[in-house]
Length: 135
Image (cartoon, rainbow, N blue to C red; front, side, top):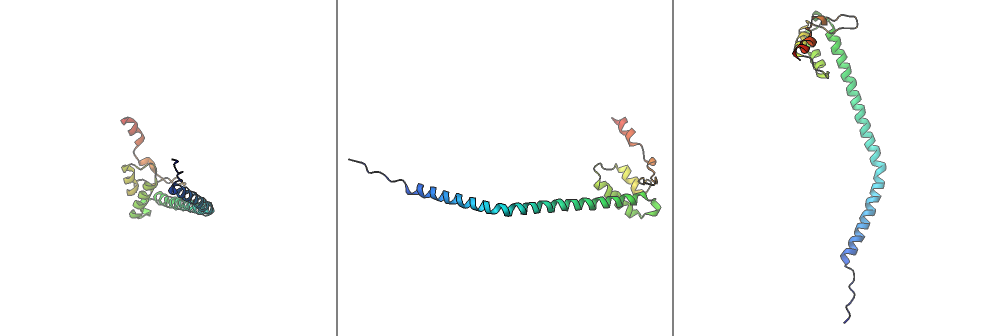
């Protein structure tokens, strides 16, 4: 008795053919997508860089405006404007002002030094010596 030869399973052959077709389709789609996706990604990236640059420019302009407000004598500036300027500088400063400095700037007891030498920071307590004494 001879055993008849069993043909290969139909499912494996069709799966292999299906995988080959799928692989070819994916390769074609990826080749077609590369020229489209890369420019879109670059456009999005450059838009974000430009947006961040504009935001930094606006922040710098506001900080300059706030500093110019705080260079003025307390009688020359509205107290609400001084409060706004101190809050803005404190918000954009990597090193936050101590509460005593904030209060002195807001009250007008102290103003920022200007290019003309109009500041009177000598009225502030010497915080550096106080920190060294605490350490």
